[in-house]
Image (cartoon, rainbow, N blue to C red; front, top):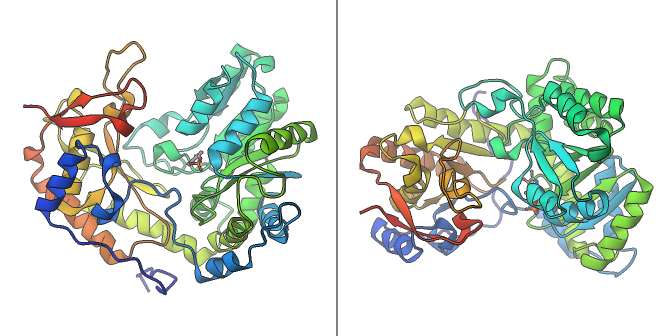
Length: 456
Ligand SMILES: *Cc1c(COP(=O)(O)O)cnc(C)c1O
């Protein structure tokens, strides 16, 4: 059978309020053409992020009822701990309310001013938390990872030669840890191969540098290893995940991604001294060691989510559903980043609307039009997000993209067919897209709260 179906049926539904183009034009104007300012119930298909937007299963909702809310020693914590350690067998586990809290605790303990952390690509909160310690976040993804047309099967890989060179140049004493992000979020969820994780480990071993995995999309990464890397086709996803983490000394995790819940995260490691300090920090900022920033019911839902996310029928459907959108867009000539990643499809807005110069934000213009035309909310990742420099001048970002991130188990194939149709229709009328400008922009993170309008 060619068709890969959703391996679940729907038991509980959340209505979508249908809107007309005229209503949406009014909504987006009132939102100053910033999609972050929209009310979510004015959106038909919300592809802003895959973070915290998963649908939980009936089993997880059942687990919510079983959650035990004891302050210390909750059985829900021990079920959570067992589920995590079955996949990621680190000695010490610290639950947090989300991924960035895990990052903040880890970096507060491990990094000093002037330290450097290499990573294939830091996610934005990871970079911000490294920099908050006065340390430097270095991205060392392979060159193919920066080329939107490269069909390399593991575009998230660390550039091993560049990593060695970086360590030689900056000195081991300035590099307290190395990280590798699976999948590489910033490139649309491009995977990292097992061979590359192993090679990164070997470099770290040679210099005595601990390796941490930013694990947010570990299951999607494992599926790519299983289906693309020689030697892994017959291994179970669970075995592949266990092997991935066997090369690391610890991990940070946002449970809002591959733990199939709406809130949660953790930090795990083998180093006892660090773990003791992290727990002290946890108690100061998040909560006691057996709940962190979470309720017992959240821990219960994570434990079940971790069992469901490594299910092969789920992962086959998940990765196929992202590729489905990418392939159908490409079939009509819509320029996208190749190949499709795990959790998102990126439209190359600069090539979609070449008549709009980068400093007039072609990505923002396209994202606004997708909303007006079909009620779809994507996210500009380009010059509006990255173009403003600290000295107030502006440059074009490397790429002007619109990201369509796909929530897990949330939308059906017909809803994705609708998304494809909307993009195709906007593509047919792409000559009508107009450049935009900021009418109000804060000095930092202007894409979140800035106001836009059309140029003239
Ligand atoms: C989402 C994410 C984080 C941060 O997690 P939050 O739960 O949003 O704080 C860190 N790294 C990566 C790769 C992510 O995708």
